[in-house]
Length: 397
Image (cartoon, rainbow, N blue to C red; front, side):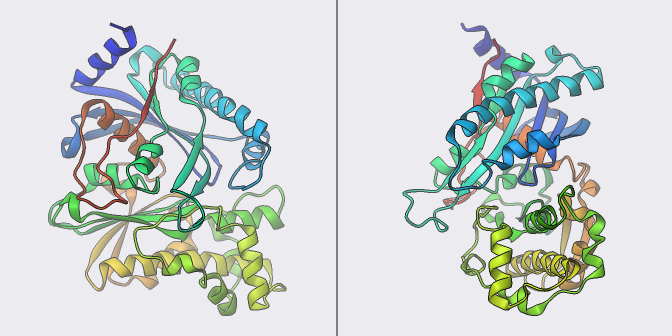
């Protein structure tokens, strides 16, 4: 038997597994590394987050991703090279993390790597396409060789192959870890793109719901980078808090057909980018508004579209909302959400035992655990939440 196959069999049969989850989102701010001790599988899954660190990307590395990120026309050679470079770089950051934590690579069972999304193409946005499509790069083989640890990666392709759009994947881990009978919960992730998982008090997988809502931080971040070179985001909404939302611009921003699409749906920076903002300004004759007013409008735009999406599925019922992602640290965004959702009780994700900053990396560790030791959670016959096991396996040397 191949030694790696034997290792997988042994790992799958263990009572607990030590799994590193990696996440690099559309904000391109860095690599989240979560060292997770996981036992059980399915709804019996238990996770202890033992270590967590975010390695910020340097300017050169970030710019190399931006050269191919969410663009319909790119230098294909750069994309090809970057697939290997990201895998190697993430592997080096895993090794640095383990050295920092004084953990030996041989103690880690597997790595679960999300990779770096460079293009997301749901069919509704590209109606001429033959199918939904999404692409994450950062090759798992390079990670496995760089670390000496078996790696699971490229989770989103099975989701697409089974009829989904490749996102959001948070629903799988959210349901296994955080669903609780008798408790109506919304798990809101305000990352580059906003999305939420609806966990009903019934705790039935067939009633769970997940969708993207539109932009959370991506338009704010892109606008800051465009007008303030050297800055990448509006820290603590310091600029937006001095401005005032422009209602004409807000109306133009909300006019896209995406917001009329039925749930569930997904989207990315391929639509919501600086060109989208500038087109809305032209349409609303607001090209001369101040930067604080522009950022205030974009922040409220994210808040109101997240709130309206949540209201569509919760109605006037009382829910507990647990917030994560960069938007959870934006006081203006969270204040607006509280005002827009008076029937919702707000909590930080940390209240459920997992750091909000680490949550997405942890969820990919859970997906790897399911691929190795679990099965298929039955989400019913809904094509956009396929009942599948995800992740491709890369052997070490």
